[in-house]
Length: 268
Image (cartoon, rainbow, N blue to C red):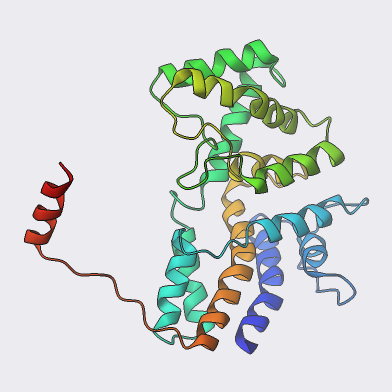
């Protein structure tokens, strides 16, 4: 627990320092003990935020992205390494290495790029007809609409709903956010008509990039770092819980080639 608390306390400072050094934002900004976790992160990044909207967004973002169930790569890897009694530093590092993979931590960047390409094409937030035209063009080319569909959920991701509600309250005039909100109104119907998507509803990645982009955080490669700070909260809590329970080491099931053949044959 002590290792986990130390990690969580230091991660925003490290991540903010990385942002300022990597993107030439100036000197490092020290931690302010009067601010909370999200507020400190926003302050140390050095982004002008007179109304504390970014700080408020990061509180929401860091909470929503802390997901720790083992159905995702980063949480699963952290759990596996921790089950061997590796310490919190090794376990979290392993999990975040998995998060860095483009199929895991890159999703919100891809969703935002899709929205920005649409805005660039139409010279601003598209109207209903333009958005529908663009989505059908993408689907008819054999591509997918990023951010829609989920491996597990068959309803709108509640994390998406929370972010959209925040955007409607705080940044309703932002053209990028407006496009995200309009997609929610139109894309599920388009995907149902298209007929190939098992789940036509948006997941959390469909909205998150547009919100941080509003505050001038336009360095796409940094979005996974934001994700990492948040994910640490969930996976470290899980790590402590499993250690307290004395959970056993995780071992993948090993099977023979004959077992695989018989299994496949039984499913025909």
